[in-house]
Amino acid sequence: LFSHVELAPRDPILGLNEAYNADTRATKVNLGVGVYYDANGKLPLLKAVREAEATRIQGAPARGYLPIEGIAAYDQAVQNLLFGAESSLISAGRVATFQAIGGTGGLKIGADFLQRLNPQAKVLISDPSWENHRALFENAGFTVETYPYYDAQTRGVNFAGMLQALEQAAAGTIVVLHACCHNPTGADLSAEEWQRIIAVAQARELVPFLDMAYQGFGDGIKEDAIALDLFAASGLNFFISSSFSKSFSLYGERVGALTVVTDGKDETARVVSQVKRVIRTNYSNPPTHGATVVATVLNTPALRSMWENELAEMRERIRAMRAGLVEKLQAAGVTQDFSFVLRQRGMFSYSGLTASQVDRLREEFGIYAVSSGRICVAALNQQNLDYVVQAIASVVRA
Ligand code: LMR
Image (cartoon, rainbow, N blue to C red; front, side, top):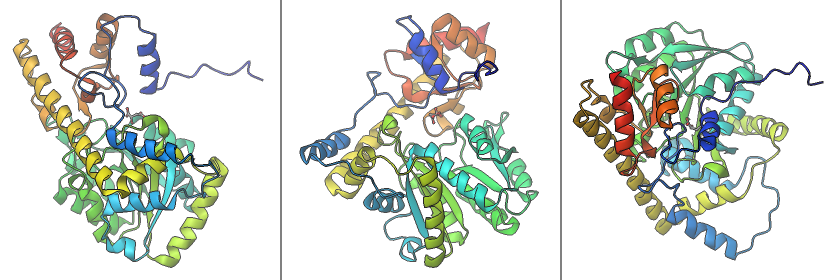
């Protein structure tokens, strides 16, 4: 049975964790996966999470099956966070949210549902995009192509190229967009640019699928939802996958969601019934713990403000690390201008390091980064920054 099974390559991102864990060098640094570490290099367990967990454990809850679509209070809290509690979309019954197994799970059930709706549709992802987007939509049965996104010259968005590609897309094309903190480039669209994308999506009858994995890591919870506000106001039907992996530091609990915006209550009911079938045949129903914790934090004012402060602290520490990186690279005599790192949003810097420079960082220094040159700034701290700077200086020089 297995004699013809070929060895698959390691995952381009999570495979780095495997290699990093096997590395015995004490000085090793993992700048690969998108995970926030605190100033001491530790994965934080947020205070708000700890409090919500303590309350839950004290109550010794039984662990029955959840509804297929997840915990109602969680799904509602997700909608409120994405659109604001006062959103007219929500009150009009135009929003359906499904608790999902992380943001990836949200993408997957959305992709499977879309495949049933329109199997011939093409999927367009940004060039470059999160490594898993292509594979995920291809696995769901779609042909995946790219639209231009990153401009290596300006280190910003090639907006004209992006717009032109979308203007040429066939009706029904699914367009995967990063709502904020673009992964891997950290280059986001302005509000005006989002408006123009929305106008094209309307004119061309495209199906926008917004991936929102880093809400709160750019400029703030509300500020990072600007694209969602504009889409909400547009009248379009669209999809959102969202995640609390990063913003709640709950990576392993797999707490995410799929949200679908429809034309109205009746459509919502039909969409819900179909997405429930997709979930039932994938994993039946979602797990209890993480989503209960997130719902408790979001729905309890004292815990919520504690969480918002902790999220702000993470965001600000990443900013400080960006500044430290730029400053120290310059002080180390690197003549190449790295100031663009300050403009990038979210956890990552698309550093411009080449694949062979990334190889050298790993082989010579035990510093792990994605081969595209993406480094996770959220894994830098005062203890490892000088070492990382010296290593980068050495590979960009020679
Ligand atoms: C990343 O891009 O590093 C994260 O989203 C983690 C993942 O699942 O790849």
